Image 1 (cartoon, rainbow, N blue to C red):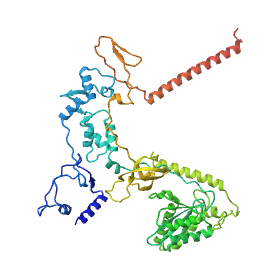
Image 2 (image 1 turned 180 degrees about the vertical axis):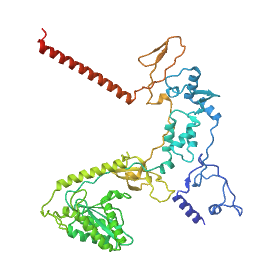
Image 3 (image 1 turned 30 degrees about the vertical axis):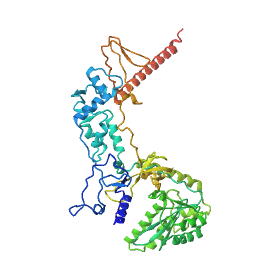
Image 4 (image 1 turned 90 degrees about the vertical axis):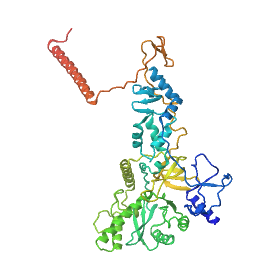
Length: 549
């Protein structure tokens, strides 16, 4: 029986249902002991446990199944007590009483007309100014149910206030693991286009396309010429895949590289050995990132369209696929401007339509390469602007969350487990967890994890801030300003000082600016016209009466 209990505990440990406890920590809620017996309505594990010993054995391992997590309300007496301990609020209360604000409280002085004191509590109109010691607790209470930024701000703004409250709310939501796991996907990464190879059949892409009602096809595309080859497969094992590729390579020669996904035939040891034996560089795409092999993925759409048309027309789907492949290879491509078969073979294609291009050396490779680069850049610019793409900023060493590939409405978008980026090359990243397990993922499937600050919320004491605001200080009667350190000194016997609030710079509306510019241009044109008229009049007098002596 003890073996079954140990087995069940190991299963619960592996499933993260329970976790080991070395000793009685402070954060464990009180545990209630239920005696054994027929009246005990508990699970089988409690009935299988040995008799309970009141003494706690610190050397053995103990497990916690649940932890109580309740929120305690914030009372006015707590606020009053914490306000008396807060140095900043004590200074604010003194400034409110004396109406003399020191230079290190500008974020409170800006609202001096709205601040007041009620029974030892600082208030701003009808809202309580919360001391810094109670702010983390207030943020936790307001974040019950994991609301968004807008809802959490609306809840806190109605009752409480403190400087930079909106910033602390945003930081609290970013540090929440649950909110980060279900947060929306960030903007797409800028597109990285593959450069065109130097010659035909240098780099090819392969993939399997399956149509349940028809068959499974091996699709082969040349990156240079866009030449398409479709082979019907009765079996998709590595051996059969190698046999099908070997037949194509006998006709076209071996390529320098093959780009494929991580399917079972392509990730097998037999296929890797075959490529190494034939001196073919094997490039596998990033898992869950078909865009890395987009050329062959795009061809699958054309094949599917031909199969659907043949089904709608009750035609032979094999003949439909062959006709589509021949049409594609003999039609000028939208990017290169030439038919794929022309670029692959280097000769014009004789089709059922007449053509004057019978020169076997008809070739414009440089023009094709330039056009390919231009069209790819246009496509990249269009796609990046449409998707509002921008760089994620993830670098090696960052802590990230990994996209959750499990399906279901209640599944979060990201897994709560933390990973560390150990390698990044373009859109390709390699991450690892605490156990050392490595995953290869696209950077778009990662989300940067904002580590919680050690002293959240931020210490708002003005003296510790590096980004202090600079307000103009206007000296009043009986006040002088020290130019060396910018401090204000009383010269009227210490009657007090009042610093003026900063004033906003007002600008004229654009329409008034344009009117003033038009008026200035009119005056300038009028002066120019008058000067020209004066010059003409003087010239006319000289022509009649001679030059003035």
